[in-house]
Image 1 (cartoon, helix red, strand yellow):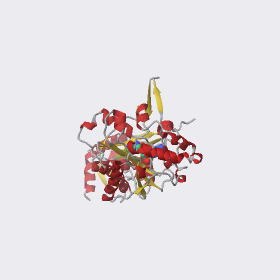
Image 2 (spheres, protein in one colour):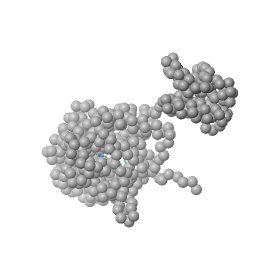
Image 3 (cartoon, protein in one colour):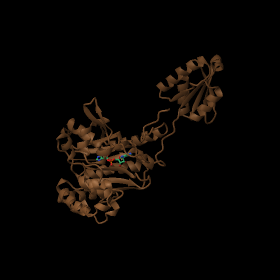
Image 4 (tube, protein in one colour):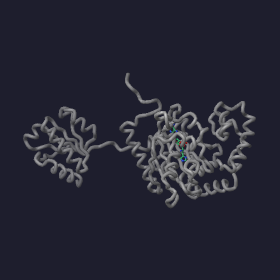
Amino acid sequence: MAITAPRGTRDILPGESARWIRLEDIMREVCALFGYEEIRTPIFEKTELFVRGVGDGTDIVQKEMYTFVHRDKESFALKPEGTAGVVRAFTENKLYAAPQPTKLYYITPCFRAERPQKGRYRQFHQFGIEVLGSKSAAVDAEVMAVAVNIFERTGAQNIELNINSVGCPKCRGAYHEKLKAYLKEKLDILCEDCLNRYEKNPMRVLDCKEDGDKLTDAPFMIDYLCEECGDHFDELKRHLAAMDIAYIVNPRIVRGLDYYEKTAFEFVSKEIGAQGTVCGGGRYDGLSDLIGDIASPGIGFGLGLERLLLLTEATLTAPQRTFDVYVACIGRKAGEAASRIVKHLRDNDVSAERDYMERSLKAQMKYADKLGVRYVLLLGEAELESGRAIFKEMQSGRQVELPVAGIEEALIKALNEEETK
Ligand code: HAM
């Protein structure tokens, strides 16, 4: 029986991969403009990193991680997200010793054993940015501006920015008590997952797809922020306004990872089905201390590449593959000459292809046409014998003869002349 790919994974095939490259190029361009540098961290980390970083009680750690024990000794996990590894690398490599802030980005596969559906995979890809070292709300706004800039350049439209503040350890305790008292009265209408959340992380009940909307009169964190968190949130809104970035305050945005405090945000689209959150992030001022014993504030986001590609199907197109020259060849001698010629062309930055299938001349011309090549060099037994090869411009059908002796140089010259026409 033929072997198939694991459930929830996808092959990114030629054609589609060109759109991926285009998108990644845009992301890198935007990062360069904003001053973010690339960081690459391992695909697997010690399981403990995510248990401590993402949070023991989260769905990710409880149900979705691909964990393996190596040689009966150490437990590792495939990265379910990018932030924990970046923060570990930041503390372990003492990036905090350089002038701050540290502005990083990554493009990485991530792994979560979720139920696959449109826009939700078990291996998916995140573009993420992380800024460490600054508490400033101006940074929070800049991080959101990076995502907005990418959306604009890819032509993605109708993406709504939802912002919230999830408070800090100082103000969250008292709020949790209030929320739990409220939820206690509603336990009989909560789903099973939420009964669990009620114990471990009651705020997550508010963004449950099933229960969230039933809890219309629930108390929200945003109304119980301490002075510092309240001021920070107000400042964020002023910076967003200064940059003309539209947002809505959505007190239900809680996020599924434990490390957030103060700012939490999501960019959401209604155009790609149930998995509409294209990008999510927030501030994690306590995470580097938790992971690496170094206190340094941080904020960032993760953006799902698959989801943004779904959203930009009409606007983000990849250029067609093209070749400058196709060398049509018949026979052994012409075949060897073709090898020499395409090497010379490629060495001179001219993209070139030749026949490898021993097709007839007619079939080779048809294939060259399908490839969309600009020029064909015809090299059959007859051409070798006469010492004259045919060089043809495909679109106009215009053709000239080139001497077979020294044909490589003659071709480059002919191509240069064509350029200036
Ligand atoms: P997250 O919300 O778990 O946050 O994931 C970020 C984004 O990754 C989502 O908005 C979505 O676009 C994409 N994504 C997540 N799971 C899947 C999946 N199974 N299939 C396809 N796409 C998916 C984080 O991961 C945080 N590390 C973000 C962050 C960075 N916060 C601060 N810094």
